[in-house]
Image (cartoon, rainbow, N blue to C red; front, side, top):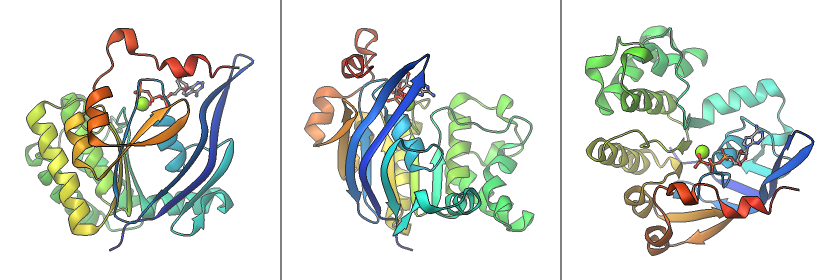
Length: 253
Ligand SMILES: Nc1ncnc2c1ncn2[C@@H]1O[C@H](COP(=O)(O)OP(=O)(O)OP(=O)(O)O)[C@@H](O)[C@H]1O
Ligand SMILES: [Mg+2]
């Protein structure tokens, strides 16, 4: 299976908030080749999650074009978009959004069941993935009965259950200890090798960022290409004093 190709041009996203326009994405042009592994780094508030939501078709851009595998997603109806998203894109949210009344197994199997796969097949796939993220002993736990890192790993299994061509992951190891985080990194890299899945990961974790082929830094509403050393120089969890991207201050009009 080949990964998805992304062509992004002139992408802008602003939010109207209390009569003001907050310009978050301010002209992003980017091509990602099938199977590429890309890290997106940048300060808190820089627009990383916004970028991922727009790419994942969960939010609409104010301006610009996103083409995924020759499909201009702005041309799809909402029904077509939902089907496209289910089939093509796996999303790991920064705040995992698991359904509290369902078990880990049911949560991870959900996208496959929605796609029309039988319950037994969906659960077999989900259970294999939950095993790969180290949760074979937690299949019947509900999110409230799991630790934060375990919930995040369930969210990763859910994102992978449809074998997406594009995985968008927003800080997938943010709640994990170093060792578990490293295991999840290994899994992402392995899945990329096995399946050629295109991988776009927002991370504050330098270890992960340097393992991915390409690093992009979000600053002043744009993405700049970086290298591993740049990630080490400027990356990492922002300290409280730098927790707001200074570039955003000038971006409110
Ligand atoms: N729905 C919204 N309405 C108004 N402003 C918003 C909305 N969503 C996000 N923003 C603003 O857009 C900016 C970018 O937010 P975003 O969540 O993309 O940042 P981020 O880079 O993911 O930060 P973090 O590293 O803290 O997760 C923030 O300043 C935020 O306050
Ligand atoms: Mg974010």
